[in-house]
Image (cartoon, rainbow, N blue to C red; front, side, top):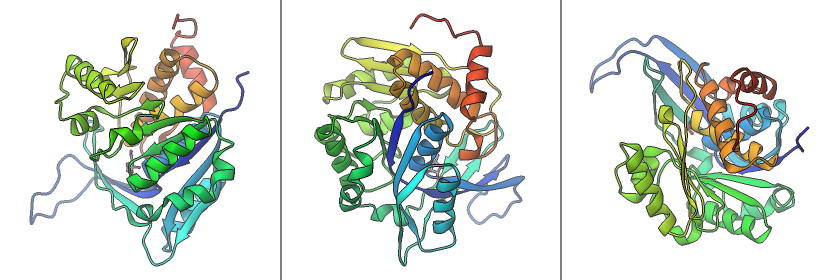
Length: 315
Ligand code: RIB
């Protein structure tokens, strides 16, 4: 039995308003949609939930608003067994929300209104230091102020805690501030936006990953959707193939990948095996509707992993 990992997330919590439809309106047009789903989301919260569903002990550091969604978000964390003692309510501001549009292929388009996430400050991170210092892994994304992200990376480094940075959504960043993170995990569009190198093919992704390494990062993982993911280090690059599933909603798949990757690593797996498992975990999440509620629990994941006959692969 693997040791229980301790994951902390300093990040966003949103409420997702997901519309499923075949087409989307043009300016001035009103159309009917097919289906709607309301659920808890936010890249930070999603990664926390994925890690928790994979069996980790998880703490969340976040800010929510003083509206209907804020207390409900805290209750959601608590009901999943996530420590929400550092999820604070910011008065007079809305909780982060994300209108999401999903097409028939399961692809999504997301608009994030950051709301209270924008008020998560370095001081909030310092206030959570007693909780954060217990973690073996800290996860970060870019839906909170970059100053808070940088501050947390320094905190992780100075406490010897593994730090995984998911630069999502992509923003212009200071590489000097993120270079000490252990893993930098953009998807293809984020990698392209951050480097200016177009990423259409696997060769493009390799060039882009090389460029990111030259900025001082030690391990880069570019996720490539149905083409898998690419791990790049100074020792070379390896492609992790994707698993075949029938996707219906890819919302949160990247977060499922990162949250589960953190757990598999903390349980002692090497990069390639942890990434391969995370790839299956993310693929499975696309076969169900919704964000956090599409994430399989550990039992479901282990069963699927065993069923695919990859238990004894050499990594
Ligand atoms: O990665 C998916 C997430 O992006 C959604 O849950 C939405 O809230 C946005 O943060």
